[in-house]
Image (tube, rainbow, N blue to C red; front, side, top):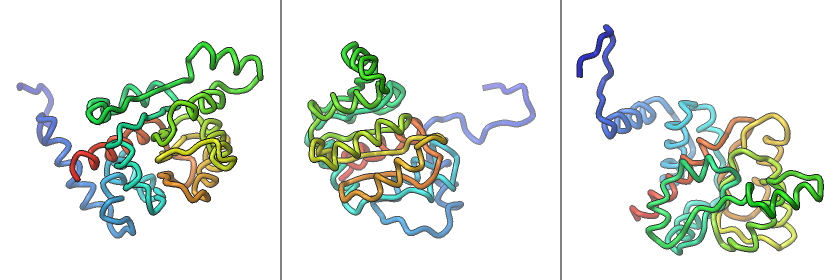
Length: 215
């Protein structure tokens, strides 16, 4: 390949770009307290965001990785709060075990009920999801209201997720929703602060599906 600029990339091979990126992350992260099974998730979050502060802010329930792997291998569904997560995740690894990725936020009945109750579609989508995804993985990267509603449903005994990946980004309610999730004694992956988003939620979810294949 003939590049017209003075600067040339280290490599143009996709696999080698990822390998080199992981090597750089391993070199730069420094001391951390993550366990051997948690670190692959953190590393992929950093890889997706180029943000070491975000990576170091990750928090894991003690059963998060094990429970997430079990959910994938058992063919449990993955529920995402927005289509961006559904588009980004590796569906092949989920479907391999009989699972699928579901997003309810644009369903006509969800939209109609949200309008009737004058509330967010994210909230109503969680109420619908828990009826169809018992034991599944809930991946929330965009809507703090979805995470707060899921937390409420868990506290009231109406929801029993296998794993909650709660990494919504933003200023209004995002940090608080993650703080509330971290108080629950259920399998979760979250982080401290405003940072997060669909991209890093996809990264964490993909890391779990990779671990499910490897072990």
